[in-house]
Structures are given as structure tokens and as C-alpha cells.
Image (cartoon, rainbow, N blue to C red):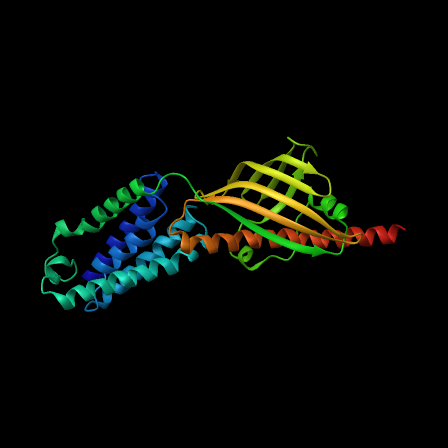
Length: 308
């Protein structure tokens, strides 16, 4: 029972300090947080001789995840996406510990849970290592962020002018929702174009926020290019939107190809893990907008046929 309490308390405090350090800008959304902390938990706070230690760590992760969600620190998708990475490196930390144990007899002197009497000086070791790793990461990684482009194209049975006129301003978005929107992905409600000219603003409203875009290039039926000048979405402080572009390619009089581009930056590391997840989320947003576009185009076509 004592080992359970130690594992739970230290894991929860370590995760909490990691989140606090990130939100205050002391460390990045990166290696120290998503790899360092899990490795330290697996190395210092899990021992195969003490099953209670595993229960303590698992309980701490569950409680911390609920705390992060209920306090709006992170959304459900972010928490679920981070979980495989965290669990993987907890396992790696545990494996490293047991490899060291096999190779040397000094293992027990390095481990918190193996001590018959808890050495208080050892309790702070994971925290010191976390901040050391965070300092090194801040020094190595500069503040420039990779700009990522996500592209989605669709062939439509409508002219380029019809598609342009329907997508430029949308009073209500209400279509079939992709998978991630059933979890926690922001759902757009409407996009209002204030002025149809270069310099005009287009505001997209979401459940819990909005994105404001400024038109930088406009050719009716060919191009609608916008810079994102402001965005306020619940959580997701690690994501930065840069540009939104629609292009309209003529196929023939009754067919066209619309392509949606979104460019963004992200503070999340390691990039090999987070980039595919980020792109998947934005592609799901694109798909929802396209689903609604198809519905609106059909409704307009039906209304036109009935009025003739």
C-alpha cells in the first residue's frame, strides 16, 4: 500500500509540474514533457516486485487526465493522443531500469521503491532531471516552428462559380461529422464574409471560439486566399494557424475541383509523432466543411429546379 501511495503521489505531482512548467513557458511541449517525464516514471516509480507501484502510476495518469480535461488545460483528443506516447516511454524507462539491474549490483541504491526506508533526497531526483532536460531542450531547440500545409481536394458536379459562391460565406454548417468531431475536435458553426474584397474579413465561429481571416488575394471562381489574423479556440495553445486558401479549378461547365489548403505551426515535439495526428485533425475539419458544401450545393440546385 505504501508503494502505491508513493508511486501515485510522485507520478501525479511530476505530471502536474510538467504541465505547469509548459504553460508558464519554462519548458517546451516536447521531449522533457512527453518523453522525459514518462521515462522517469517508468525508471523510478515502477518496480516489478511491487504491483502496487503499477496501480499507483496508472491511477495517477487517470486522475491527472481528468484534472487536465475538467480544468480546460487540454481537450479529450489531446489527452488521448498523448497517451500512447506516454505509456510507451514509461515502458522504456522500466526496461532501462531492469537492464541496469541485470548488469550491476548498485541498482538498489539508485531506486526509490527498493529502499526499505525512503530516502527523501532521492524523491526530488526525477524533478531535477526533468528541469535539467527541459533546460537543455530550450537551449537546443530555437523558437522557430515548422510551417505545415494540409491539402484536401474534391471533384464536384457543379461549376467553379457555384462552388465559390456557396463556400465564401456559410450561414450554418450542419453536416455529417467526421470521427474526431464526435470526440472533441472543434466544430465550425458558420463562416461570415464581411466584405468580398482584398482586405475584407471572414470570421469562422466554432463551439468555444472563433478564427478571423483577412483576404489577401481574391479572384471570383478561382482563388480565395486569407491570412489568419486571430484565433481563439479552447485549449490548443500549442497550435498556430497561418493561412487558409481555397482554389477552384474548372473541369468543364458542370464540373470543378475545389482544393482547401490550411497552413499552421505547432509547438509539439517530437514531430515524428505529433505531425501525422495534427494533419489528421485538420483533414477532418476540411472534410466537415466539404460535407456541408455538398449539402448546400444540392439544396441550392433543388431550390433552383423547383423555382423554374
